[in-house]
Amino acid sequence: MLGIDAIKAGRYADAEKLLRKALERATASYTSPKDGEAFYYLGLALKAQGKLDDAYAQLYKSTWSAAWRSPGYLAVAEIDSIDGDLDAASPMTRMPSKPTR
Image (cartoon, rainbow, N blue to C red; front, side):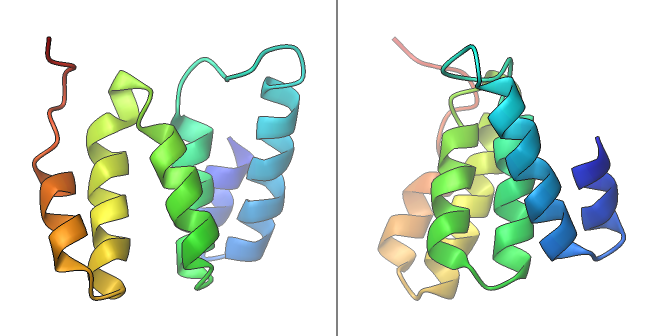
């Protein structure tokens, strides 16, 4: 994915644009893409640009996907920690990687 390559190169604004476009295409006919990868990486690009509120929302969206649940919750907890909200951050780091009954 070009957006991921842009993140790895430190081009966060380019990554944001590419990942938003990828999500727009992926959700054009469906309400959600096949997994949370694009949401996760968009969240990382936004976080790197200091857009923490938008990053939080995108990272949280990535957690619906089992493959991205753990990294998504960890990234959300990091933002909570940056914001000084350790009470919110702590449970996020203990979220189950698999849904429980």
